Structure formats: C-alpha cells, structure tokens
Image 1 (cartoon, one colour):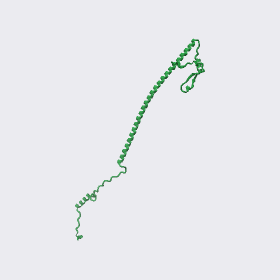
Image 2: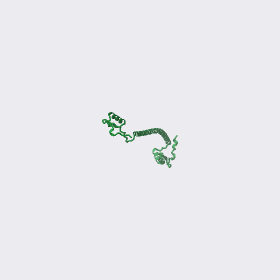
Image 3: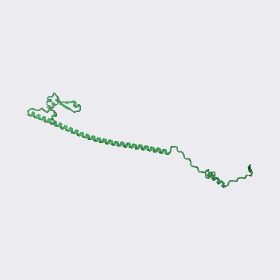
Image 4: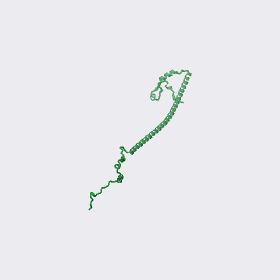
Amino acid sequence: MIRLASPALRRPSAPPGPHARALARGRFASNGLPTYFSNPAKPPAAGPEPAKRADGPPRTYITFMLTTALISVSVMLGSAQTAQRESEEKAQQLAAMLSQNATTHQMKFTQFRQQHDSALQRERREREKIDMAVLVHVAMLRKQLVEAGIEPAGVDEAATEFQRAVRMDSSAASSGLGSSYYVATDSAVKAYIPDIHEYKR
C-alpha cells in the first residue's frame, strides 16, 4: 500500500515569482486570449465590424439593367432614324417623280395647245377665205344686174329676208356644238342658196 503523507508533513508551496507570471502572460497571449486583465491600462482593440448586408439588389444587377435599357433605347433611336431617313428618301423620290411628270404633262399640254391654236388659225383663215369668196360672188352678181339694168336688192331687204327665212338648229346648240343656222324650206331664196363647201378651193 501507498501511504499518503499527512498534511502536517506537507511543505507549503511558494508563491509564483515574476518569471512565472511573465511565462503565464506569454502563454495566454499566444493562445489569442485578451490580455486586458494582464494590462488594465491598455484595453484590447475592438475587432473589425461585420459587413452590413445591403437592402437593395446587387450593384451588378443594377448595372446590367441600366446597360440593357441604354442598348434598347439606342436600338429604338437607330430604328426611328433609319425609318425617318427612308421616309425622307421616298418623299424626295416621289417629289422628283411628280416634278418630272408635271414637266412632261406641261410639255404635252403646251404641245396640244400649240396644235389646237394652229388648227383654230387654219380654220379661221379657211372661213375668212370662204367669206371673201362669197362676197366676191355676190359682187359679181350685183355687177351683172347693174349692167343688165336691174337694181340689186339692198342691205335692208337682205336683213329682212334673213330674219324671215333663216332658222337656228336648237338641237345643235343644246349639245354644245354651237349655233347651226339653215334656210327654211318655204323660203323663196332656198333654191338659190349656194353650197358653202363649193367655195373651199
């Protein structure tokens, strides 16, 4: 059996010296424990605070959305500018085509007007020629009457006979062809009216 020594025979332990206390402080410091109690005049520095979590969406998501919106707006603006440019080109082409057509129509109208005026001048000269031929014929007939000792009918008598014997064709006037005159069949001068076309020579 192992006999334990009596309390009376045990030696009291001596208090730790300065070397032991320094060794203990080093051991606590190496273990990462605070040394506030070892040096009350210098409390331990507070550690870094944990990063606070942002309430909104991440910055990368916001950047992505802004970039997408800018690209969409740029594409829309580009499409609008392209459509506007195409519309302006079409309007310019249409204006040029209308101007060319207007010039062509103006040339055709001028040519038609010249041809129409020329035809009217030819018709007027032909009518004047026929009128002069009739006047010459009437003058020759009056001369023959005077030489034969017969007094020709005067202008007043001719005007009176015109009012009595000459009629106007209303159907020709209503159709827009102008006035058409003819000698009534019961007139005494009907048989002596010459054919006007005989003077077209």
